[in-house]
Amino acid sequence: MSKLVNDLIQKGYLKSDSIIDAFSEISRMEFVPKELELEAEEDIALPIGYGQTISQPLVVAFMFELLEPQKGQKILDIGSGSGWTTSLLAYVVGTEGNVIGIERIKELKDFGEKNADKFGFVKKGIAEFVGGDGSLGFPEKAPYDRILVSAVSYEVPEVLKNQLKVGGKLVMPIRNSIIYLEKKGENDFYKEEFPGFYFVPLVIN
Image (cartoon, rainbow, N blue to C red; front, side, top):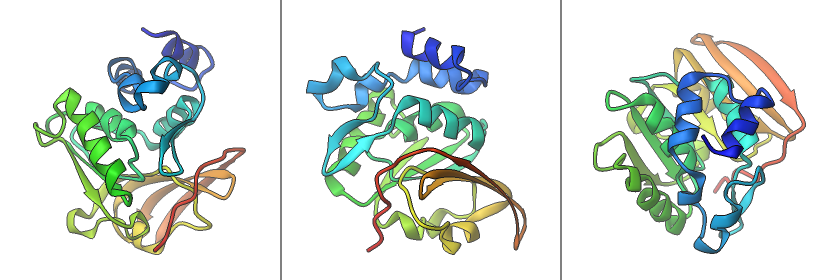
């Protein structure tokens, strides 16, 4: 187990066995530009080009524990960037599950796809990467058990709420907080807010 993963466990950010296993097996080093590989084990956000970043591991761990991804689920990962979160989710859902990573910057979408397939996730059909405006979700594969958004917005887009299954969960940053939504009924949502975070913005075309 890496020092980074061990530190996140000790600090209480990583708790679930399946998420700890994913963090242990899917090295962040495989998802950063070559010149930043030595910094990949640091608990900091790192630039991946095009004004985007790979999120701080502590923040990813916090969001994953809220999201509670499970084996066999269908998950939408919005702002997939260099492919790390999509790959972590693919590891958790396994061969019976499906993770769709959506990224508006084509070069990053291609980079993320290539990185994820270092672990065979694309070849096995567990993960797929699409280019597009994440604020619109991906209706072609809806509804989803889980939706993860890794870019900040001012509100949860209604279209994303609509693409969530009843019983499903959505985690995303709104302003300087992380929002947790659980869909209790078609128009019934339980919401919690966790302040004190910073993300790159979700670009809406």
